[in-house]
Length: 272
Image (cartoon, rainbow, N blue to C red):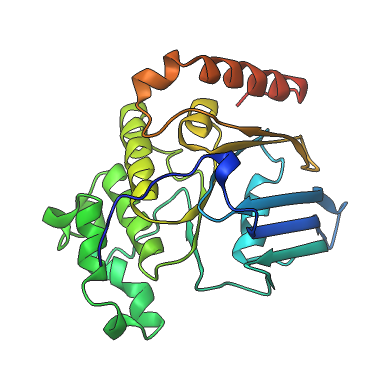
């Protein structure tokens, strides 16, 4: 597998053929006792091939619900949802998911954890050195035979990202993957994720509570309302890549976007 650095398109130059398309998407959780929970209002959202889209919003606004619907882990209540023009009817090999906890199997080494989706899917023999290439790409080659308890939190998350990429999915969905990390490790993982995205032609949807993280990583930032969640802003991030943490903080677009997102969240009664 060749890991050549790709040219990153701007949001305005992105293909108009949406790889993720939600139209009138809604979700209501029914309860045996007590009121039903209306998690998502009808949502219309297109995400183009190769985009990195960040999603922010108040706690409980349905961000994770949106991700689970796209991943095929939960069915929608209303509307339509398609990946590559095909309706989502369950989990797909074209979608990789990274949650806040890496959820590595403790009795498997890093290499074995990364290889697991290929073994389960019966594709291990088709991919050559892909597992070792992914481990090398994320700087884990020296830890490939270590067990999860021997790794730092950041290393565990890198291994989790490797596992999600093992089947070479077209779409990577990430639900607060760095929320449990300390500030310095989180900054390093932001840089690492930017590099992974630039190295692999993937479409990424990132759920985050951090405004700065959303802007640093995203080609667009989606802002959601309080529950029931709906999209109240879809903001392009016109800041050149590759981005450095120091340079982006001084960029006029960063300052403007940060104020705009914070004002929107303040209007919802919460800043994240």
